[in-house]
Length: 143
Image 1: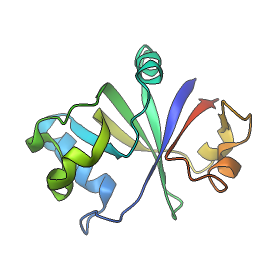
Image 2: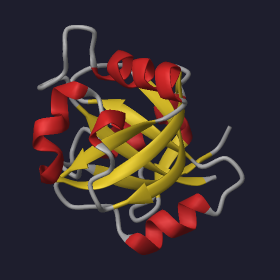
Image 3: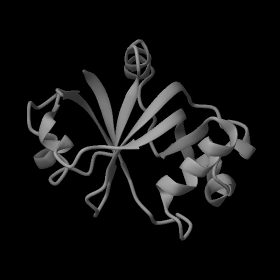
Image 4: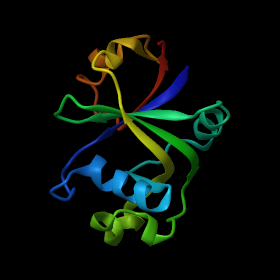
């Protein structure tokens, strides 16, 4: 499966953490908008990923060992409705280049990074993510 791996950090997160804040919104509304700072994922890549039966992207906790799959229904560049974004980053919503409409988040298995290869380089994601500042990677994942 070809997908995207995105880094996330707890820099601005509330005490409960990024994942818990987003999960709370999913539990409450059935979905949440997850924002990606900086350059957006290209429209071509986003369109290709959304054609899959169950589009899911890998979230990599920068500086941590937690990994999560977020199941995505749509992707957009426009700022979505603010009441469907976790409150801790609503005031900075205009700074995000890309938004993912997430309908489910699940913890990934511990070995997930060893099952991912960066499409452009052929390197394992576990190695590439340590030596690159890239905010996201296009990866091939094999179960």
